[in-house]
Structures are given as structure tokens and as C-alpha cells.
Image (cartoon, rainbow, N blue to C red; front, side, top):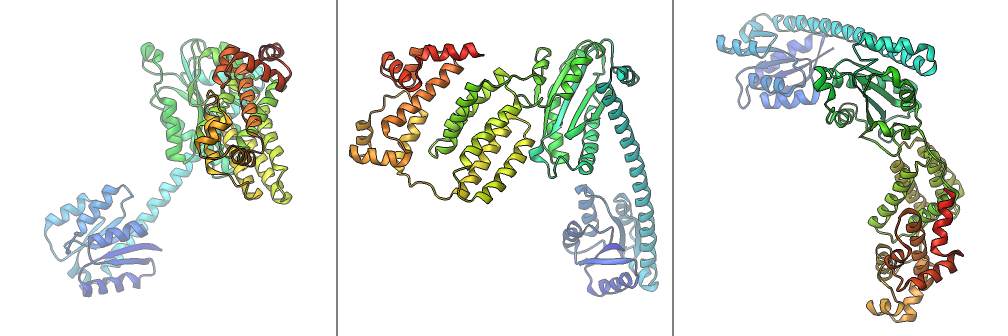
Length: 540
């Protein structure tokens, strides 16, 4: 059935043409319009394959309507022009708008078969053209899918066996990509799993989107020079190209290419992408071992994404270090406090995230251990929830989501998101005094001030006993215990992650003198600040 839109301002004529169209079983009349403006609205709503329209009508004319449709880029339907005028001027405009037929109304009324016969011929012609286009598209897709599979197979064989390296290098040479000398650019991308509308484990669905991703990459790299694009497992892509245009252009950086590709994935595939860009200065043959490590790395985007990677940084993408136990315990404690403290400001939480990320990246800590650390934090907190069945379901969902995380920040954000859901299961927490809340938030944001109980109580017009009572009700600790713990934990973090001298740390966290800092720190930890730093440096 072919969908038809009828646009005619004269009711008697529209009634006759409607009966002519409906008498033919080939057509479905999806709507009638009195002028071009109404016809344009109906076209946008129903997308008919064929429009039968008068030319001269009040408001928007039929030709103006067709012109608007053509300009919209939505795909021009076949159009049959009806008019009472034999003015060639109108016919000429209709031809320019690619109208399929131009009929005189009197001719249609004297021959009731003329309009439906013309429409039938156009419909059969459209069906034939659509079938031809569909077959051509299918053939092109089959060829491209076959090419994609061959590229993938040759590349994977090269990764698995040194005996197959020569075959892959020969395929590059055949594509005019330098193998022994010359600069070659490479890109590694991976679909951002948090943006997918399907599970990464759905292989058939993934194949469709990988095919689309390869097409996007080929389109964008086509004008850069000879290229190869390979679809790998788990939504990963590897692309390589040799800049065209001689030595000068080959040495120029591919400015903004990676960002452009990521934007294209978002625009055309409606998916995010993580990406890294590399440069091989002297061909690929001598650097195949490094290339293999790059493309098979488990977490290449964990600490870096949307970045151009220098030659000296390649090894860091695949090699990670064990997280020392004392650092693991420290960050578990810090993250627990960040989650459980409802009064922390967004800026304070972001500062802790940044500190953890900076130290983890500098030490190249193992992403799997980072995930385990966040999981342990979440599980420790979830044990306090009464509804064990609901918590078990939430924990299972969290584990699954955490497993899919590709970057440090995704791990952090996912943990905080699931903690908010956990809070919903735990119900309402303690009633918190607003003035005390603001005071605690201020402490977290600025520990350098020498806070005094009496001074704080007076500043909000509370008696000292009432202030002390409300403070403990809010935090679970006395004022002195809370501030001391906060300062000691901050001192530990600064001792382990900065080169600040101990007296500088003491001053930055609000101790009036260095001796007081030394005494309290040793009381809380069993060692002096200097010994604490030295002990942990020796363990690295």
C-alpha cells in the first residue's frame, strides 16, 4: 500500500479526487489538506510516498509546499500536480521541483481513470526503484562486512602468532601504508559502555554497531590518506593511516582528529567513545611488539582518554603496579568517610577524588585493584542495611556495573551513584542541626583555622553544653575527637602524597605549633609524622 496525501482547496474537487484515489486498492489516503501549509504539516507527520496537490490555493501554494519539502532534506516524495491552468510557467516550476506528473483537472474529470492510472504507474516505478536501491545497499553492506571480517582476521592472526606478522604488513603495503619507514598515525577507540543502549555481551547487536563504527571511521579517515580500520572485541577499534600530501603534511599533527571522531560517534551512532592517538615515526615493522601491547591492553583508557600519547608513555598503558596495602587501607577509610559524611560539599568531595586519581595515576595502580577497593567500601557500608534481600540485588547490580567501568572516574561515579541508592534503602538518617551542618562543612573545607569549641558555640548563639550535645548527635563524636580525627587523616594524606615539610603540614591543618602536632599525631598513630612518612616510603 502506497501512502498518499491529497492537497486541494476546493471541496467538490477534493471529494471527487478522494473517491478516485480510494477506489484503487493500491493506495492509502493518509490525509487531506486545504492548502500547502496544512499539507506540509501532514507530510511531516505521516511521510507519504506520493502527494497529489493543486497549485493555486489560499495561503501556501502547492509549489511552495513542495519547495519547502525539498529544502528540508527529509526525502522528496513523488508529486502529481493538478491545475485548472494550462500555463506553461507553472509546469516549468513543477519540473524544477522534480514533480513526477502534471495533470489538468478537466482531463482527470473527463477520464476518471487518468489520475489513479498515473499514480499507479508512479507507485510501481517507486517500488522498483526502492527494490533496486535496497539490493544495491545490501550488496554494498555484504562487501564491506566481508572486508571488515578479513581485516579483523588478518590483524588478530598477527597478534596471536609471529608467523602471521608478514601477511599483515603486506596488507598495509598493499594499501600504501609505510611499513619500513615513514610516519604512521594510529587511533585506538572503544565504545563508552555507560552510553550503550545494549549490553556489551550481546554479540549480534555489537556486530551491527561495530560495522557502523568502522564506516564512520573510514569516512573520516578517507581524506587523511591510505588507511585501515579494524573492529576488535568488546567494542574496541584500531585505525591506522598514512597522511597523504608529502613529507611536510606527514610531519604535521592531525589536529583535532580524535576529538572530531569522538563527536562523530556521539552524533551519528548516539554513543560515547573513549580514544587515544599514537604516532609511529619510522613505520610499523620494528614496533610490532609495542603495537601488540597497545591494542591488547586491558585498561588503556583507565587514566587517560581523548589524548595524544607520546612514545615514552606507551608502556604505561599496559603496565600497572600493585596497590600497597597501607595505601589501600588509607583510601578505603577516606572514601568511607566521604560517603558517610552527608555534610561534605561537592568541592570537598571533588578534591578527594582528584587526590586519589592523581596518586593512582602517578603510581600506575592496577585498575582491577582500584575497582576492588571501591567494591570493598560499598560492601562494608551496605552491611548496615536492614533489608538484606534488596541490598543483595543492589550489590549484584553494582558488581555488574563496576565490571563494565572503563575509567577511574567511571568507577568513582558509579560507586557514589549506587551509594545514593543504598541510602534510599537505609531510610532516613539522623536529624541534623542546620547550623552545626554548616560548621562541619566549613571544617572540611578549611582545616587551617584553629577551631575552638567556645568560639564556635558563641558564633551561632548556642551555649557550650548545647553545642557539644548537638555536635555529637550529628557526627557521633565529640567536637575534640571529630576535629582531631579530621586533622590526623588529612595529615596522613599530605605526608603520603606531597613533599611538604611536617611543620608546613601542621600549619596547613590548623595546629598552633609543631610540637602539638607531633604529640597528637603520635598519640593517634603510634609514630611521629616523620617516621610515618619514612616507613611508608620504604615500603614502596
